Length: 139
Image (cartoon, rainbow, N blue to C red):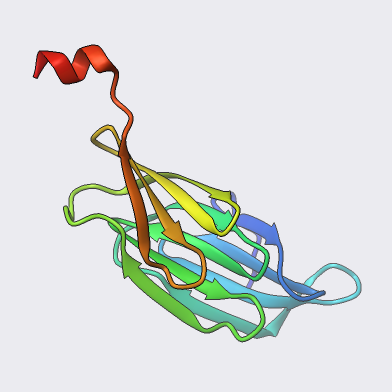
C-alpha cells in the first residue's frame, strides 16, 4: 500500500515517530521508521464521518478533525476517539478551528456565530454572534 497521494495531509504530531495523515473521510495514523518512511504494518484507520474532513487542528495531546457538523478528537497516545456534535444543523459544517488556552473556537460554513468548546470535556462553553452592529439593527 503506497501512501504517496496528492490529496494527503501529513501531520508530524503525537508521540515521537507517530504521524497522522488524512484522505477524504479517513484519518490514518502510523509509525514512521528511522528513514522517515511509513511502517505500513502499524497503520490504523479512523473513520471520522461520512462527509469529507474540512478542517484539522493539532493540539498538545490530540488531533481534531471536523466532518460535517461534528468533530472527532483523536488522542495522540492511545488513539481513542471521541465524536461530538458542534452545530445542530446537519447542513452546516465547521469552516475553521483555532485553539486558545483550554478551548477551541470554531467558525461555521454559514451564520455569523463562533463557538468555544472545552478541549477536555468537549463541552460548549460559549457562543458569540460576531455580525456587525448594523447587521443586527437591520434585522
